[in-house]
Length: 59
Image (cartoon, rainbow, N blue to C red):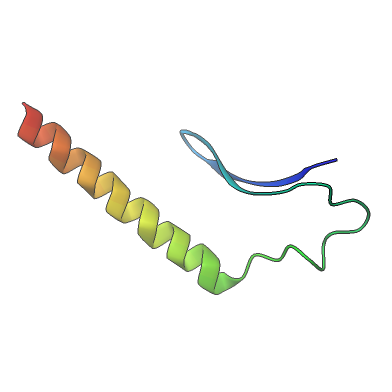
């Protein structure tokens, strides 16, 4: 059984990670920290800005 971590966003979902063959209580193994969430939000913000710029330049 594979365990996956997903992030639900307003416009869709993002697969964060997959742990193949992980069974049982995995809550102590997979922990999202505030630091990781903050970094992910920053990365999404940069990616969104890059997409907007690319779309603007393509016009």
